Length: 229
Image 1 (spheres, helix red, strand yellow):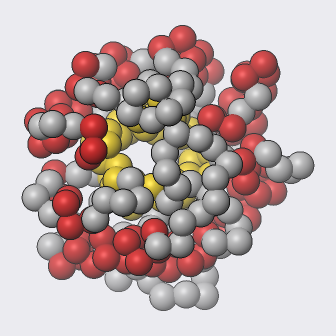
Image 2 (tube, rainbow, N blue to C red):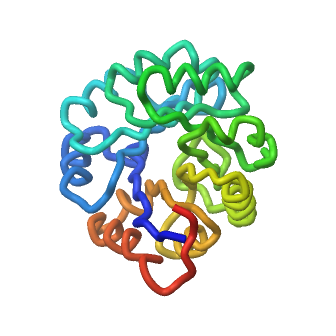
């Protein structure tokens, strides 16, 4: 099995929004791969983050792909608009979609990569019927809605189960993990089968964000078993 470098996607939810351009420039110049963009509506999750004006600012200044995570009710209302604002990946929540298969294909028709996120209480087996349609699965390792939460370690066997499900069907989606990720647990998550890590406070709350990003990129590149890629 081929081993590829994993994706690091700093979450701008942890940025200083009074100085957003400096955060964007930092990530542009770093070894990070994507910007992770958490959009919250105060309905699906108990918090409101930001919307189209911030996306417009990101589109103008970011030089790396925008990984847009929609934590919103009825996300199908906004798929085309987020794609028009530069979203490279659009991820919706299984729990927020009445017609998940339809929404996945709506995303794919825009040309974006299609992702589905699952909350900590949701079994990966609920993705069985759509896994073949997905470019990315996002395993939430905290309850969505707020940054800075502690990592839920039950997420690790979920990642392993998901990777096994995919491999058995000769499918190789990105498996992304979001919530409480940092240098202290990244290797275990990657060993379980993840190949994309979202990190918010661990990166943007650090004294030296670039050093943390470099560390997260280096973790697991050598010295442990390969995973499908």
